[in-house]
Image (cartoon, rainbow, N blue to C red; front, side):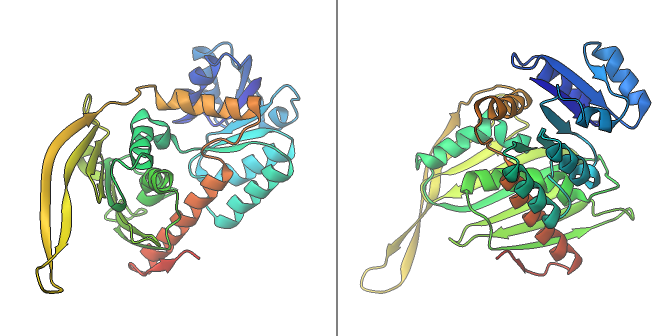
Length: 333
C-alpha cells in the first residue's frame, strides 16, 4: 500500500518514519502548504515523494490512504475530499472542531466502505491497555471515580484551548476504560494571557455513578501525566512519567458494614499490599500505525475509528459550552 501525509508541522514528520518502516507500506507521498517544510522532509526522507499540491495526491490512484496532520480547523475539508476520492483516512486528534462535521465524515466513510481512524494515541500504550485488562478481569471491581492530571509548561496553541489540546487525551482514555459516554459535562477554565484557556478543570458524570475529573494546564512547572482510578476492590495509580513503575495497584479501599441493631452504617478501611504491574512497552505510535494499516489490509474496524472520534468531539463540544457558561452542567443526550 501507498500512503500520503498532508501536514508536515509538528506531528507529520514523526509519523513518516513509522509508516516507512511498516512492511505493508511500499511508498509514501507528502504535502504541506509551506514549501520549506516539504523541502526539509525531502532532505530527511529522500524516499518520500513531495507532491506539488493536495489535488495531485487526491487524484493519484496509487495512493490508498491519506494521513491528515494539519490544524484541526482544516481536518474536515481535507478528510472529506480524501473520502470522496476513495481514500482511507487517518486524522490527527481531534477528528473535527464540530459535531456536525464529525458526523458527516463518519457517515461518508461508512457509505463509501472506507476506513476512518483518529489518532487517539494515548490508548495505544501498553500501560493503558493493561489497565483495561485489569478492569475487564475485575481485579479493581466496580469503578467509582477517575481523577486525572495532564499538565506541562506550554505549548500554547492559538487555534484551540487547553481542553481541545490536552483533555482530549484523557477523554479518550476514559472512554476506552469505561466504554460509556458521560451523561453530563461541566468545565471551568481561565485565560491568563489573553489567548484561549490555558488551564481548565472538566468533570464527566456517568449514568452508573462514576465521576471523572480532568485537570489540564499549559502553566505547570512540571510535566504531569497521572491518572488515579478508584474501585470497590482496589485502587490504581498510572504515572506515565515514571520510567519503571507506571502502574501501581493498591489493595486499599473502603467497606461499609451495618451497625449492630441499627440502620447506621460503619465505615471500615482495608490497607493491603501495593503491586507494581508490568505491561507491554511497544511504542504507541508504532502500534497506532499498525492499527491503521491492519484495518485497511484486513478490512477490520480500528479501535479508534470515526465513531470514537465523534464521541470525543461531542464531549469536547459540551466542555466548551460549559466553559463559556462558567461551569454550567451540559447534558449529553
